[in-house]
Length: 49
Image (cartoon, rainbow, N blue to C red; front, side, top):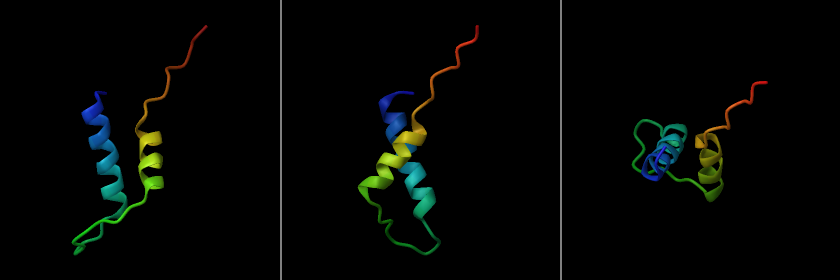
C-alpha cells in the first residue's frame, strides 16, 4: 500500500470508530493514530516449510 493510501486508511479507521450521527467534529488523540497505524500495517506473510 502506498503512503497516501496508508494515511487515508488510518484517517478512515479513526473517523469510523469515533463518528456519531449529528457530530460536527471528530476529536481524537495521538494514541488513536498509533493504534490505527498498527492495524493498517500489513502483516508479514507466513513462511511455509
